[in-house]
Length: 369
Image (cartoon, rainbow, N blue to C red; front, side):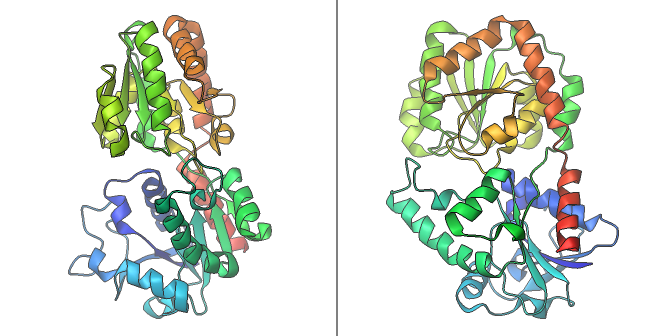
């Protein structure tokens, strides 16, 4: 099976969840027997020899350059259904993209991954803001041909599959759930995680303080924690939005780290009391699984796909009730047995989310379509 993977190579440099998915799925396809993989990407993202640059996590995989900038290519594909991407490939059976994008094809079949549909959700606190309305218009132009022409849509979760059908009218028989996984570094850290419960003084938040990640909810919990657990710190990894800067600066128990490389994130989680993820919208939620793989209890909101991913292996709480969240953190800080039970359940659940399983589901979806 010949597959050409249209890839946003810039996402592999400082990858977030979507970037990790892209890296693992493309590398997984490259290593699958019977699959001949070529990465296709704008020429300006390749080096002078037409290869993926060495600093990129996908370096070493065969690549072909496309003649236009990414934005121009995708604009033409969405509006004109041209130029056909097959012309720059060697007669692939599939053109596959691990991120949301429409790619025009001539004879190859087209498969696309959908991570979430927050642009189309009507009931989010920011759904009617000018910036979100602009995003919705942009995504409408992209998703219209995806829903109409894609031979296979690969959803990150059952929640995303369901919303594809409900919001966009996608055909259920064309959707396959491939899911997400956890990088091996987080599982390896679990075996090394021998830090005593009594000295764990950090609650880790991943994703920065943003509206979508529940930045206001995190700060409300931090205010509650100041009164009951004054020595506990809320440590935030990830780039936040400026609207939360002033409020965060006023809280001495909130520490903002900005972007944190994976190796440092692993160490941060290893020493934490818990990971708090109060996101208002997730198509999946890889950070909760990363924390589980390390062996750290997870406290998460009940929004979107998070109940599906967390299951009974973490604490799913009403994120709009900061006292409830703070009380759960206080219990974990004082009850070592409860902490250990959640830690063990989380590790067990994370084991089911290996990237190899995701690649297997992808390959099966392409072969059986």
